[in-house]
Image (cartoon, rainbow over all chains, first blue to last red; front, side):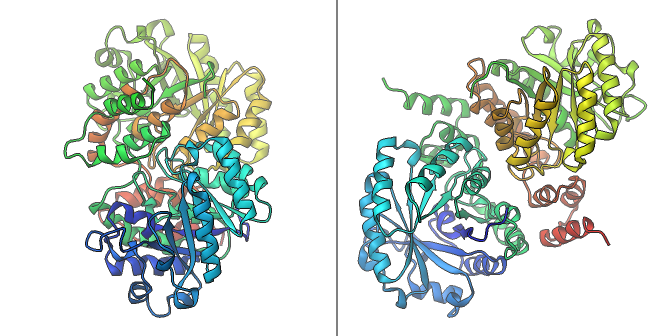
Amino acid sequence: MFRPEIKVLDCTIRDGGLMNKWQFEDKFVKAIFDACCAAGIDYMEVGYKSSESAFSREENGVWKFCHDSDIIRVLGEDCAEKGIKLAAMGDIGRIEYDDIPPKDESVITLIRVACYIHQIDKGIALVEHCIDKGYETTIQLMAVSKAMERDIDEALDDVAKSRLPVLYVVDSFGAMYCEQVERLAKKYIAALPGKTIGFHGHNNQQLAFANTIEAIIHGCNYVDGTMYGIGRGAGNCPLELLISFLKNPKFDPRPVYEAVQKQMIPLREKIEWGFHIPYLITGMLNEHPRSAMTFMDEPVRGDFADFYDQIADATTLE
Amino acid sequence: MFRPEIKVLDCTIRDGGLMNKWQFEDKFVKAIFDACCAAGIDYMEVGYKSSESAFSREENGVWKFCHDSDIIRVLGEDCAEKGIKLAAMGDIGRIEYDDIPPKDESVITLIRVACYIHQIDKGIALVEHCIDKGYETTIQLMAVSKAMERDIDEALDDVAKSRLPVLYVVDSFGAMYCEQVERLAKKYIAALPGKTIGFHGHNNQQLAFANTIEAIIHGCNYVDGTMYGIGRGAGNCPLELLISFLKNPKFDPRPVYEAVQKQMIPLREKIEWGFHIPYLITGMLNEHPRSAMTFMDEPVRGDFADFYDQIADATTLE
């Protein structure tokens, strides 16, 4: 598959940091950056832009805040001139407008705004603010697998009237099969002429890569991946698969294979992510993975079958 | 997805045994059998029917030969009366007609014949022989991702004229994306009116489950899975995903979750299978996984990126 419009975004540090509170060694982050540059990746999302008032500096690493001084210290003075664009995510409710400097004072190019469907107007307002400050923007409309169709339609109407250039289909819970991805991709594209649609998957059912292919087939042009699939719970679409699939001549999978071998496999010895039965269960039941993450963190793990009953019961009304 | 015609076949022991020469403990095989029965799985493939002259008894466990005496000893006298049908695979060139007893002397119900496209006539002949002996039959037409279209057409013509009831689309190298699965499923179905089409995937690119869904959507009614995805190299479609996806009321995923937890995860500590970069590389390059398996078996593993160059070069003509 080769379509020049396709942009690949690596979110290894941002989404992976959900598993270790962004406590990455500097040299690890630099190695991932270097690999992304060498592989021809379009964007690297280095973390979150967050309010200092919302999160503790002691508990969270620097990539929870993404100050330019930290980015430059770790990635180098010339990190904005390597051909790759840096991105950071802002979560509605956890970021203030003042946390975002004007673009000409930052090495970040793209601000990705994450919001739930009831926050879409706040999301659009933040996007417009970032555009006025000089940034590229996207919105990640989260947990859409639990949203009602009427609310999705209304959100798309609002987005259509805004200056937002890129809206993502996000499978927050790893609950979607290819049919759902196809339907939402077509729906977003039809509702938003002139705008670009992206896809961000989760791997609860080993479908993150397959769903990303499905999204590409149906016209999504921004796609996310992480090295060795690191990310919350079951993780994300493995970048090594995505980059091997895309035939865009600018991509080279070798630096990604090397970073997986030298950085990710050793890290995987220290922190656990990826496919596991509890994540499958929350995914198939279209539930947030937090109960599965709690289950996985127990010193002695309970029975998978009991966990299934517990989650299935919890989704059943009295 | 619920379609009453869909039959699920567990090949945990047969395909998984490729990783340990079928050296499974008896109680392990019995536990997998009990879980399949309790989960409502339609068929369990317990191993290969092979000629004693072709393989050593010392090197290979009993499931390489599948004598009825061994099956009954491990699974119980009443193993043919549990509602699940037992299956065994025969590889063309590694089995003699005399290795197959008449059906009324065996607890096996289904013989699955595996052959390459140049062996299709031998495969059909063995199938006809098995039908005459009283068995259900299928053919697994292997490595079709490397076959020329003209040869596939001719094989399908031969199959159409035979009594074979079920032909499988087999992604031996884990090389297929959803488009290839869709195309082959539609092609087989169109060429074989009145016959049933199956799908057997491999997980080199984390697409075994996704491709199995794709095959089901396009009309395949026999689908294979293994517990925790055990199988040669990157392994197969994980049965726990497949059985969670299918909404056929007779299936219960709990016994599969339990078997994964109590049998498969401990086994995974002893033998290694599943997604790994070298399998991705042979899969994306549509090559047999044997070079990746050799790479994985080295005491000190080489560089993934070098392995990619080596395999990519080997597929390039001088």
